Image (cartoon, rainbow, N blue to C red):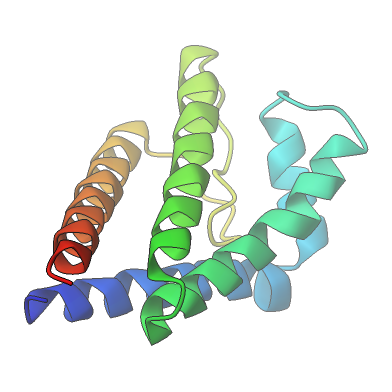
Amino acid sequence: MQVSAPVIRIALGLWFVYSGAEKIFVSGLDRFTYDISNYKIVAPPLDAIAAYTVPWFEVVAGLCLAIGIFRKGAILTIFGLVCVFAVCIGWAWFHQLNISCGCHGDGAPIQYWSKVAEFAGYFIALAWLWWVEVRWLKRF
């Protein structure tokens, strides 16, 4: 396994732990429910169910990725989360919604082009980690 793979794996994992923990413990799940409802994709109570579960998936998958356990599952889980986030952001952009993305509870409106760059970075990092993981497992 390359030296940079653990660095990227740990950094990305800790970023998702931070993002999920921020929603749970700092801005609060009620705020995240409000942010999700602003997308107008799901109606209550599905917005609350998403708001109360997604951050925990972020924390658990991020911890697994950072610690190095269940790496493939963590990569796939984070990939799934990023895909859902990207679809939601695309929906909001298509409908020209001037809302907060809900990522860190700051209430600032979405900067759509910066989100495109952010998601591109996630997808590149996750694809590279997956490639390294699969290549590393083929050695045995």
